Length: 367
Image 1: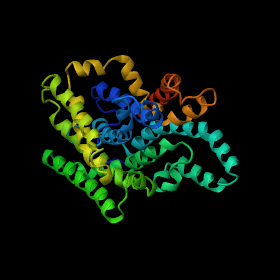
Image 2: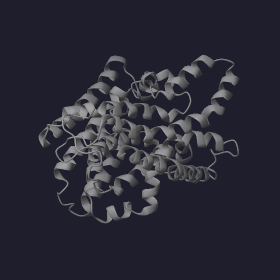
Image 3: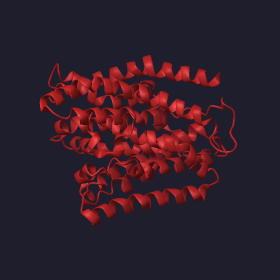
Image 4: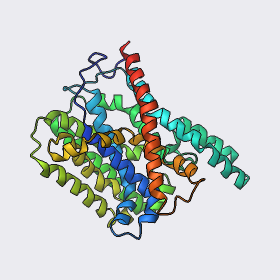
């Protein structure tokens, strides 16, 4: 069964690599890690503390980037899919699940210790484990924090992968104007949700998390749709000149300003409404860039870290938990060691597990 009505061959023409976007993934993953484990340490430091505290919004960047990359990688210039349903989902499973499963396994000691300490919660831990392994924990907020907490966003991502073939079929005929309309509609939906949640129940950011609104896959869908629409715009207009370094730097500045602006609207929790359009513009400009910014982002060590960024993201808590058994990672002197250890483990996992599995999957599809 194929995605859509008319598809190309199983071995489609490979487009150029977008190394700049790959490197940006590393910075986004690092931002999330700093938010989770470094914000307390960096809090007293001017600027750095504020930057770390905004790391939560990098998750929305990943959703925008995911929609963009899937359009870029799995559609042709006419917007038609270039692979089968089975091949698409298999490649996504190979991409997501190995590191995701490793994160689960590494969390077993800490969860067992927690259950033993509380003398209760065995049933809930088992239920949470099942939901984690099935990648559905984001649909139930009370299960999100069990096991490997950052895995909730991969539960959302799995839902996007499930929906992508059907969304692509619906979007196949839309042009440039339709893409702009889709981005605008996604923006309005996101804004309406967060404003309504505040008006109806007066929920602040923390209460949104406890009620599950911050995790729910359907409420994260507008960011993914924005990324898909941005990807289609890029395919329509990728021949447009980069115009030098100014557009790329202005896009970076716009994202910084958008994240800073979220603090102004904290009570309305308009986070995605503010940052997602800025992220979409950043992804578009970095993809189209051919200036010195692109050259810097194409530096091979950065690209390698970008390729390992998924492992950095999903293994951040297990590595922190396990390494904490050997030293106080909450100390400023030890935190850089944790970052280096996390990067080393993630790069090794990418090179020794993820990349070989990906290559094997491509051979399997070709056969």
